[in-house]
Length: 112
Image 1 (cartoon, rainbow, N blue to C red):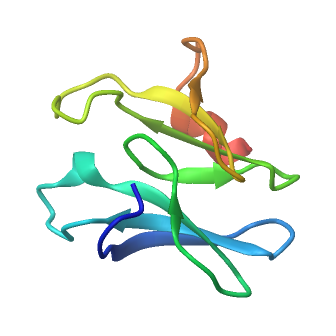
Image 2 (cartoon, rainbow, N blue to C red; image 1 turned 90 degrees about the horizontal axis):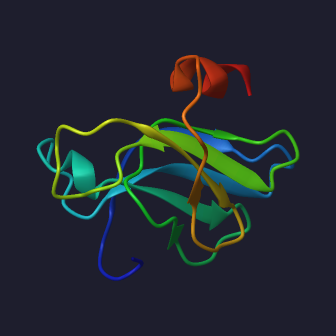
């Protein structure tokens, strides 16, 4: 959601075209609220903060800047969950999950 204040946590990354910044944000800033973390995006020229739906975690921009991928659980109420690889259009829309992969998800994100 985009309502209320957010705390900037970490992972500030420019989009490949340098027109936007993405970063991890939290509505509480509390370390125990990890499942409430989201990926926030703001235009470099300024404007409102948008957040991607779902639990945010370490992420990577696609080389063309159209997509953001990250690995996280799918249930905010479950703190012990298997990570799923999520991809979302950076311009908005619901994320979708990719099938289970035969290699560690974080390895793929690092290579992307």
